[in-house]
Length: 96
Image 1 (cartoon, one colour):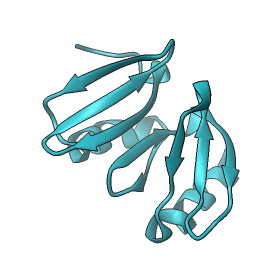
Image 2: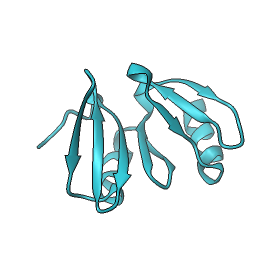
Image 3: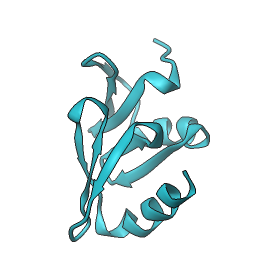
Image 4: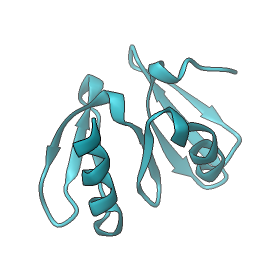
């Protein structure tokens, strides 16, 4: 299946599969790992914010600070930001 990148809110790793969360509360499980999605989507404004999460920066609504903190995305999805990825994520947010 092909998705319009703007419809992807975020991707979550699940072993060798990835769950793709789409607009309108839809999701699809795809038999590719998150690294494959990261390689395909990074040029479309996606950011790997955690070992298991890749988010679409266009869907970021707010960032909640904490040790790593978390981000609130469209449709009220909450995704944790790892401490290791936090600085890179904040730099990208500042560029939006």
